[in-house]
Image (cartoon, rainbow, N blue to C red):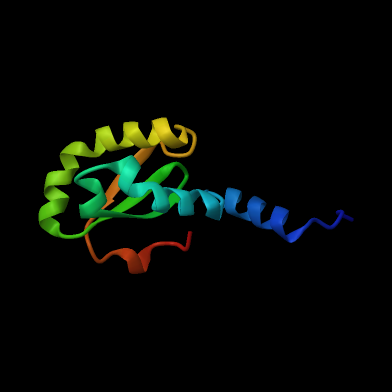
Length: 105
């Protein structure tokens, strides 16, 4: 029989198995987004969720989506330098209006 574990430990293990970060990680990314992402990312996108090292970012409109695609590599480098490449290894830019299909983070 397994020893009982605390709820916090069980939650951390579950999130890890699902490829999701601890809730504090995504909170930190959202709070620091304007400073870390910089312009135009801070005004034109919103970080939505992080799974298995991929940060999913939603553009505010389709025009921004097209322009921002060219800067994804630079954004990924800044985020990896700030949070670690083990936390954020790539960025997926998403069109507006796809939040409904994202997991809870």
